[in-house]
Amino acid sequence: MADNESVIIIVVYGASEVIDHQNLWTALETLAQQCSDILWMVGGDFNAVRDLNEVCGISGDIRMATEEFNAGILEAGLIPLPMQGEWFTWHNCSTSMRSLWKRLDRMLINDRWLARFPSAYYHSLTPRTSDHSPLNIWHHEIVGIPMYAVTRKLKALKPVFRLQRRNKGDLTMNVQLAKGFLDEAQQLRRVRRRILQINDENGFTHTDLGEIAHEFVSYYQNLLGGTRRRLSVDIRYLRPWARHCITDEEANQLLLPLSADDVKQAMFDIADDKAPGPDGYSSRFFKAAWPMVGEEVTRAVLDFFSTGKLLKQINSTILALSPKTTSSYCAKLT
Image 1 (tube, rainbow, N blue to C red):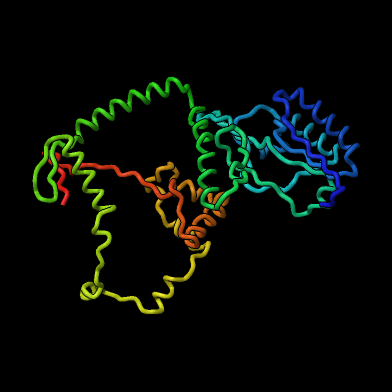
Image 2: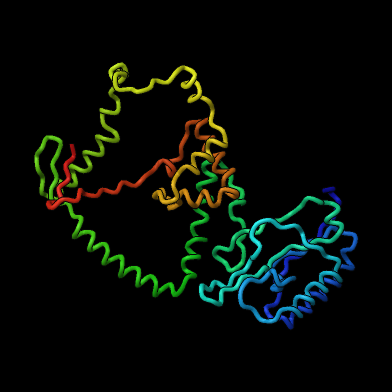
């Protein structure tokens, strides 16, 4: 756009009562006279639909309101901006037979806007926490390396998801019920899965709770950070059991730089029911949101393979220790 080119953008939140819609249409007609030679866009929640195919579910007679909406747009010289994504932008959040979907949100432009930006369009996202399509929080600019930007945006999404959960009923009652169920479940888990004894690597049995805990810690310290990690292995001793030794050409293929397609393929190869990481996000989340988050996640992964640097909050995991199911609840660490 030229530095001296003017643009007028109006954000609309239409009245919920149909009788009050006429005030909006009249205002748009008045503004149209002032914006005839200026790039003009009007967008937001009009609380009205333009056609019966913009409603799914049981609704009252909306034909008159629809005709008034279309007449108001026509008088104002506005035309719809092309849209991609979800057709319906509002839901009454009901799971009963009275579930209702409508397309209440849209963006309209004048002919000068169309001539200036003939390929422009907007994207309608899936409704989440609000009953309307959400703002794209992922597009916020974060200063830092790609991996840091991804982790900050994932963290910023957490309050949004928490709000979504809170909106599903009486929060206080749900918390009390959940707390009661959790207490019962944890008590049952302590009774059924308590480790009463453990055998160390030398075969000695320990029944003291402190000694049991010490053996667990010692075992995993040795496993994850012990001297055995520094022991070298002569692969010549493994050759008799190797069914196939890779060729030089295959080895060179393994050393090729990763591409964006490789990152996406790796993500989509992870099953949806795999346990999420410590941040709570599963592979299913990333796959469902890939059109939005894929580019930035890919950039973060490729940056790691390029620099070899991994953030502490990414390089973490949760170890859940569960005993073997035996009559004595005995776990042997050998």
